Image (cartoon, rainbow, N blue to C red; front, side, top):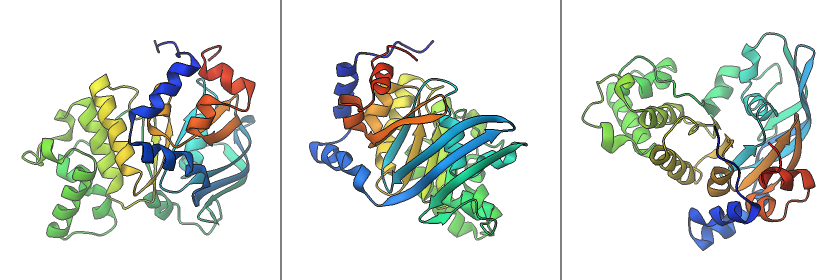
Length: 283
């Protein structure tokens, strides 16, 4: 069972636990950064059931945007619209637009495979392939046609380093990925996503099944990766959203109630419903 959400002031204190004062000032301005992804009047349906209602948001480039809200509020559905992962679910449809650098990703001419290389996904449950550590990271580049072993070796090392996993696995790259711990498997999945050279990383509760030490490593990794990637993360953990994100969107019953800089949203939310949620009055 998830721990009760702490009072607003206690959540706010978590904002200082990642990075310097300069980092925090930069984070406060993140909402004004260049927009990487924009949604316009996005509605989404599972058959006849509407799951998202008129979502319009601008997700800044090279920043972390957290999606928060109670279970079943549409966070994960929204996340999956950003790389068309919902396409694999029969009977789904949408209206409105999702723009990646100004291009509507739902345009019929868009190559969905190419889109998912640019917008990678890390799931809640770590999903390593039943292959070696090396082959897990090299899988995407090989599918794309890269068969030069020297180039693959360099790429695998680079991605494992960026995922903060290299020092732990460098002497056992040929071992099965299934032998890694849960936290290591999740970082391996992040390394695998990085291997396709994405612009955007979507993370659906990447630390929800991990112990506190592994969660801290994932959070540190997210903080480091944002200098090169646009990151959107779904989390139920209020403190985690406060620690790692620059912007936060609060969802409730399929609607985006409020979206803004994380520090502002957690300290002086505009909507009473937002304040009620982050102070634990409901959810």
